Image (cartoon, rainbow, N blue to C red; front, side, top):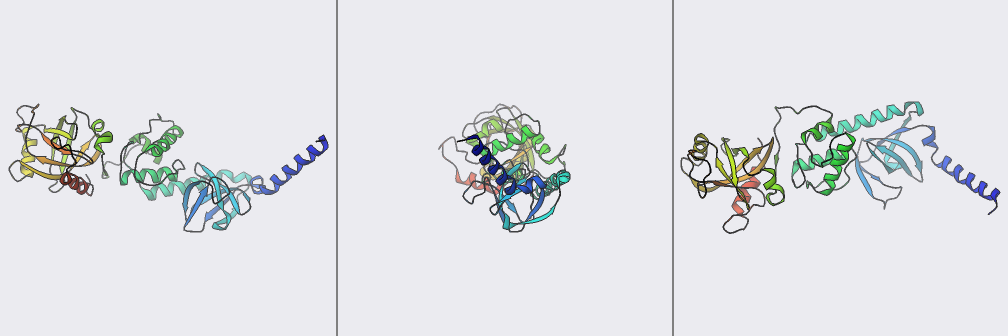
Length: 328
């Protein structure tokens, strides 16, 4: 092709780009979602990947427009939304682009506040606390998968992105420091309740409460608490009361005698609370002398099995489900 024709073709392409995305050159504009839920997509097509759902009232920063779509940014996300579902605000102009960023930041902060602060959690966890974490990560633009309460690979990857952005070690664990960075705070209020977590025993239970760990148990029905130490256990956790007074509390919970009866409990260890079930019968090996408890007792978490049958005990699991309704 002659050089003259190449130059003309290039100028034509540049002119089309300038006309199509002139709003981007003229200055950024804020827009507000005017429908109940608007999908932010990877490209200007209904068939493209959905990045995030934006609720009504969400403010986005419009960068350009083409064929019924706006190119926008929201938090850390950049994508496309259908023009008819966004009410365009007054242009902020090039000099006011920082104002648009501030508006978007305030909008994200408002969403985080409405969602609420999650407790620290890690891969393998499951439940409402993980859902809260996923919603917060979604609001910040790091998480685009389903809000299913399952701390899997996608959630771990999103946490790593957040940690990288905040200059933290990229472990993928939603530690207290990670939650603080997410909310821009230094510490969590000591008066707030610790949300109960469902610990999947065969995924990470043994690592979460290691052998030799000392923890606190709270009986859900009576509210009584006592200290324990993990002796061993593979299919479930084998524990012993730490002192005679702790053993006396267990006995009082069962009405003054030892019992195999299952009871819903909460287990608190390392600042986290897990739903569990216990029996109150001393049996088997003893490692703590003079604690008033001749043996150990069993604590079951979600998915735990008995050592005898090697099967999940339905009564224990029902107690775990009941414990999920309680908080520390």
